[in-house]
Length: 265
Image (cartoon, rainbow, N blue to C red; front, side):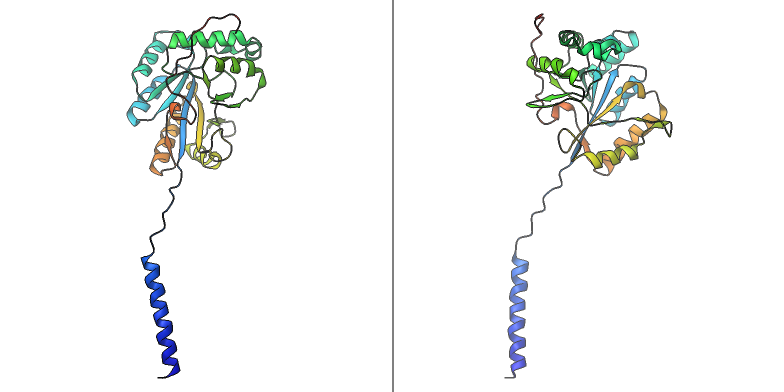
């Protein structure tokens, strides 16, 4: 037999065995890409325009956390009505943003930690939320499980006192701001870009993005339009999922801190 023919038979058989081995191997298991979780939060309500948030969440099934100010709720009958709607809306999670919001005097407020604690406790009694989540007024302060972060350290004594009472403090990773150059709020496109660029780096918990908005933004037609577009685009493109803060890593749900009036706090 010709040597060239022998070489052809040998190499052909080897190739055939290799091909059979290749096709008999199990398919590689593809690891799913971890999805980003977004937590939409609104501070300082209820205000004029908060009714839009209530209807939007119910219509589009968007989970939202509202950090309410007790003094705002008791301001008038419209605010009380919106608060009542929030309480009945399963897509709205009510949380504590203090009763007075420091009356706008933050440095003085945080120089008296016992008054801060008293204000938070008063708001808890007034709102009766189903959680122990707190966002301090005017401060981006975190206290979750054994982790902590503070932007302005004058809030540390107040934050630490609240933790001892069982409260959990939530700050924010990014804020939906007003663009002074364009004279309008950030677009949905810009916010989505921020989420994608920051979700794994500049956040308290990687893959989890807490967005701060304010109720006084809601009367603005452009902001409402962009908020709806943001939610629909994120969902349509599978960029992220929306969750309530009670699903945030490390947060314990429905834990009632003791309602104490100890003057030593």
